[in-house]
View 1 (cartoon, rainbow, N blue to C red):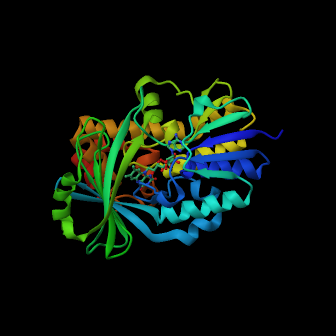
View 2 (view 1 turned 30 degrees about the vertical axis):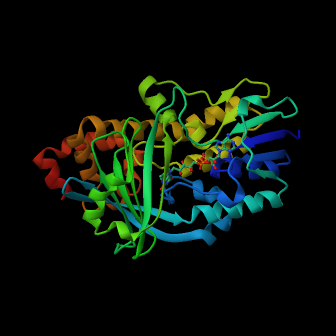
Length: 357
Ligand SMILES: Cc1cc2nc3c(=O)[nH]c(=O)nc-3n(C[C@H](O)[C@H](O)[C@H](O)COP(=O)(O)OP(=O)(O)OC[C@H]3O[C@@H](n4cnc5c(N)ncnc54)[C@H](O)[C@@H]3O)c2cc1C
């Protein structure tokens, strides 16, 4: 059955939903509120190799790779821990603009400069996809993040993540190359964060204000994992409006408060929507089956960082790539935080520490 679908929001989740639905034969209208000339993306731009997301993508992302990273250095106070994790740093704006062109070539009707209201479409549409990203709204929790692109002297192979004692508490340094990096700061919604907060980090990584070439910031909606962790119940992503509304990407709250990773949720939700467009309740279940556990576990880890910083450090210690068996390294933190916590507890014992070193 050919459906007429309105997709509201031309970020990654909205573009991919449009592209894949159109490829399946639906008639798709994509509405992006920004004008084409002002199109922008607020992001650290790292696609982390934590799941099968990149295998779902049209190959063109490879045209927009800025850098490949082989690991993360976790900084906790004065201590440093290493974790091997492959990440690709992308020029997201250029990539998404090429994806929009691809969507147009597959008959998606794209309108820039058009603000959509998902609950106010008329019945000439069969379905509305809410891909508006994160923004302040009732009953939603979100983190804030700001960043700068700046010149400096960086290790081009690894990301640095400085942790601090709060839920979405980290600073990052994501190198594009040895001379340029994206440096950012995550914080909770109650915090009044500003670029001034980055100064402390600038000192540590040898960057000065005059090195800044660009600045940006945005919100990260982590309500999906938070709801599962706090209340143990699945969040509704489908609303029986006329026409029905279904959420994807940040609009569905698919971001980890632990790491700020949300690109993967945008890709996976768009793919799952296209695969389950005829049965939206199944789409909702599939989100839970494929992402629910990871998101609620990483939310749990984020709460440990907030409420028990020394326990958080113990867990990170066992993830230090220099002490772990090869098979444990990759994505261990995200995939097995409960196991990690147990091991972290044991790590407190000298005997266990001896075994690891
Ligand atoms: C500073 C920062 C750094 C980040 N770094 C990383 C990272 O390194 N790795 C990672 O995996 N994730 C990162 N994230 C998260 C990641 O950027 C998001 O999870 C991802 O962009 C979600 O895609 P989306 O399409 O759901 O939403 P968005 O990318 O936010 O796109 C939403 C789009 O909808 C449009 N829109 C909004 N309202 C309307 C409306 N009413 N009508 C029409 N259009 C509308 C907006 O203009 C926007 O273009 C970061 C986020 C921030 C804020």
